[in-house]
Length: 464
Image (cartoon, rainbow, N blue to C red; front, top):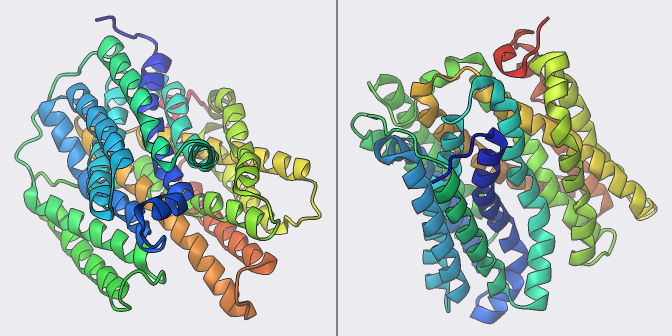
């Protein structure tokens, strides 16, 4: 077995699996109408295909760090790729709602192990000074998946079948598995201590009922009492989980990591940024189709501009961080990124599509720079012994941020419609929702400003 020495090669191999997971998470919404017709299910009820996947992710991600330490990160990562790929094939073969949901839960199990364990595998193979380069390559899938998912899902559904959306994961999974086996050696398993079953149960239950409550709130797919009950249970279970984690000797979710300022800011302010920014991939295609009257394929091609911006960002991250440092880059760029989200409120059919494309590309660049910088900073000061716990917590917060971004977009539209008295969202309602999302992005700024000027200098190479 040849060992890859270049951190970019390791990151690209790990990213192939992460891209598969992120792409899959975003293509389902596009394929839902066709899936509903084929399976003879109400499209509203079929949203459980999204909910079941998200709940499985949130339940199993917290245990991923312990499993990786216990059995070896490379071995767990390869098994996760196999599970996710096989589950994708089963989703494509589903003949009813029950089999579809079961396969999606299995996908969630594979994805929960694949994302944080893949990141852990990379972090244990690189030096601190290689972290910026590695994280730049690794964050590309998370940025491109939500953007590429809708157009790819639409094209495959229209040209072949909704089942092809999931079968696409099979060749990607096989190639990723072979590359991991061929080029990435294992790291030594560590002793994670006894499994904190009570902590995992509390956190898993809290996250599961939280996602169930958020996904069903205001969507008429469950009784009126269901969402409030789930959210109440999530709060109660969350309080018990926090209390347990503070008292346990070796907790499943190590809250002491939040005392590291670089990690704590990335999880706190970084989550606010992710929530606001994640509302854009939800709101923008809807606005282009509802307000502009564009087709799903046309709106998908326009939103692809954000992916081009993300690609443009990649060679800029290291020079910017080395020249200005994490605090300056994150604070200035938070303002620019907030403006990139808020300006979507001004889009009208009178705008030339070329101008919208350019604005979206610039916004994509700023969001990609922020995501990559936050992801890098979060692991800058984490000791090797706590990398597994840090990757698990980081993975959970990323999934929650993306899900809450969709909730923010939908709640923003509903609040705007209530404010204006509109029966259905139009140009004004979308404008208000985009301004709300931009404000949430900007709300991440105060926590960044509290960082010391030389934070993460050992990683960025920045010197005052």
